[in-house]
Image (cartoon, rainbow, N blue to C red; front, side, top):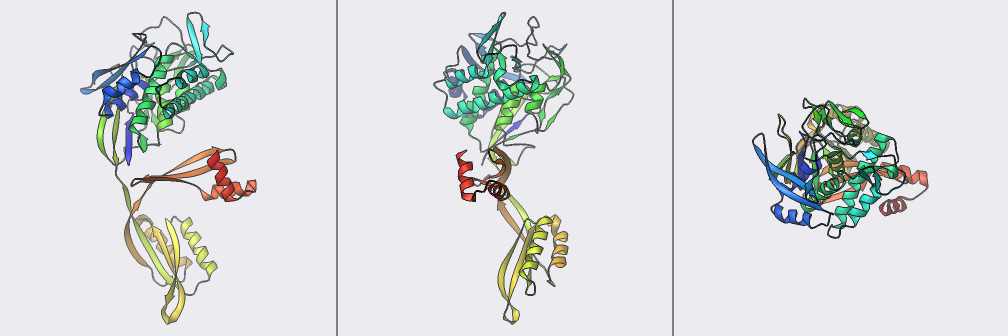
Length: 429
């Protein structure tokens, strides 16, 4: 199974993700040429070598009409809604990544306000969907990321998404970052994306609205249900763009899985910190999963079906991995039942006690097995009929998904539908 692990111990920003993913590919110059031929107006990508704390990696420079957009940490002469660290001169990358909206306009078009213009989500959609050389799946992912950003900004400012407008200062640069990451993810095509807990920085950021805590409100909203931490480095390490990209692509968040890396990439920010200012990406083969289980079994010939059913349900409720029965013939030609309980080693004593308590057996056999298992994750889907849990399984060259029966049965009963009809409706939606 192809797995991508992203180490975000120094946060995340769009340009850093682009650079780290680019380093994973065997032909980065070909991909760089593809990025520069996408048709983004005035945008040019340049790959630069960068060294942080003795580690050599790549910094991705994006210029718009020949000029790199200036970090707002370097110039305080304009007042935007973009956030930057107060009384500090360092930034995570060279160009800013916070796209906080302007919200004093009523129409979903590009607006002028003095010397600055603001771009709506529909304007951005027009730009992205109009790129002739961008694959459809990449366009879809890029817009999904931007919609996450718009939802976060709308929540932070108490506004509907349709009224969110992004400052043109940073718009093309942000679109470039998002499109580039989406294109690279399409090229790499990982089966799973595992993201480490995210270092968000600490302290405060100054916005046009005032001084706000780190992470900024939009970033904090995007990182809901994601493991994050602050640390001692002052400043905003995780930008809204970085947070939205990670939230969209991550299969799960957690520690590095057992894997055999084939390539390692370092995407560098512009500024220097006490720790290497980079994202590390590792692409490789996940170790196929195995685990050890115990099988506890016994034969009974003097229990009713109701008693056996009760014992099975009780064992499952106490943590058994599985309980099953097999009809058998016993001594004196009596029909009987073989009861088998699969459990983890640490649950052995409890399962033995429960078997003796809820069955009539006088003895229990134990066997140890090594089983091969697919990696399993659960996703709760919002459907027109209510929330439905889906189990996704992958590994050993296969992947499959299945809706949880309990949720299907509940909805089918509420809606007076058969399971077959409900499944057809869910697949259609």
